[in-house]
Image (tube, rainbow, N blue to C red; front, side):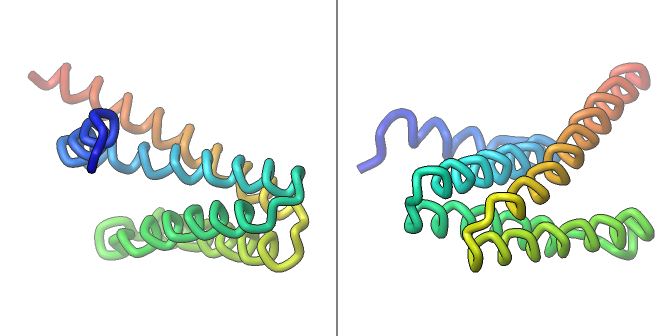
Length: 130
């Protein structure tokens, strides 16, 4: 049975714009990577694997949604960054070394900030055009 909070989360995702969904995916991925780092620090292998798996799934989804026809070089560059992140996540899961997660986290945070700025600019331009 779903709680009120779970229903709220489902509704917020279903009603979010594409831009908001993108930001939500990055935010969730960053959260899972941070939780995986904490799991390594507490030597909790199950939590480490679970959170790395969640982050990995999100990065794969981000990669799968790239449109190389429209995005051109930007899509190709993002694909390379996503491949780097998935490699770091794989290495972290295999070795338990948090440096791989920290490498992935740095890239994710930079990408998230870039998208936050791009979305804000887009919204500003849309409000000027109206």
